[in-house]
Image 1 (cartoon, rainbow, N blue to C red):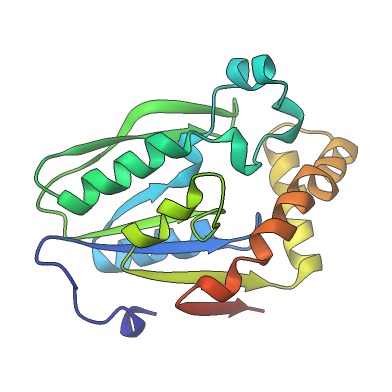
Image 2 (tube, rainbow, N blue to C red):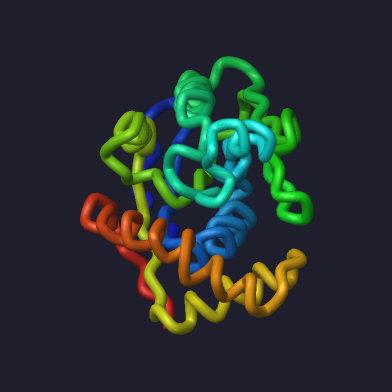
Length: 195
């Protein structure tokens, strides 16, 4: 995959986006690529709205939908990363409690590559349309639907849901989000098909 990156288009920093449906494998690919390149890793999941906020907004049962993230803060972070003049601090996400954790990630100015991964990097509405222009190159990860579904169910079970609840969530909110995300694939510079 590194061969597709090309030369760094800016003197300071290259920002690579990896998008895909829930359970497609984008986090695994992003982590491997970051390790290979010595790059920083910025998961979009850190920008989930807190559980309390989602309950107040009536969106908790749709967690993971585009409007359950702080897209403005995400875009601001990407813009700061683009400038690259100072340390950029960003949140992460704790799957055990399903909450964002502030200021866990710190990208130093000397880091010349940042891998950004998330569902909505290529979405063209709801404020997300500002993201793609802040990325130098984008990849969309695809995998067979049944494999992706099984991965999602197993992940939900691993983090505390019952088998029935995990399957209901994977076929409900996750699948609704996946349909929206799948439609963004043509906007990617490259597509990665996993078998």
